[in-house]
Each structure stands twice: as C-alpha cells, then as structure tokens.
Image 1 (cartoon, one colour):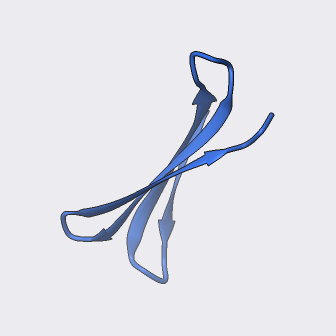
Image 2 (spheres, rainbow, N blue to C red; image 1 turned 45 degrees about the vertical axis):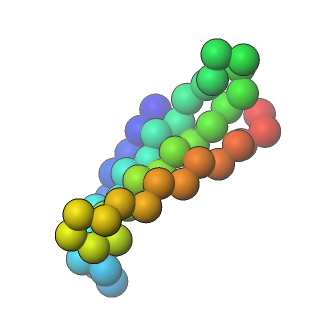
Image 3 (cartoon, rainbow, N blue to C red; image 1 turned 180 degrees about the vertical axis):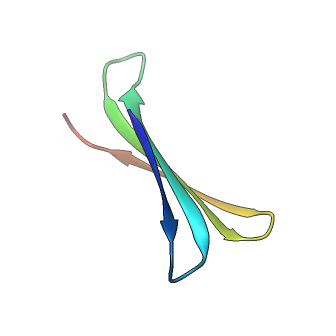
Length: 48
C-alpha cells in the first residue's frame, strides 16, 4: 500500500510505502523532498 500528498506548507510532495520485510515485520517508509536534490527517508516499524 502507498500514498502520496502535496504538502502546502512546504510546497513539496511526500510519499509513503507500507510493506513487509522478508522476516514479516510491517514497515512504513516515508520519502519527502526537503530541498531540491535533498530527500529525507524515514523508516517506521509499525510493530504489527
């Protein structure tokens, strides 16, 4: 599952991807464009 949204405050797109690792852990990975050519990638263990 994935989603994307436009952040009006920062005038940028944010993307999130939800999936499972090979071990079955559920993760969400968020990718945001902080500045031109600067990406912030955050991985969250959802513990499900």
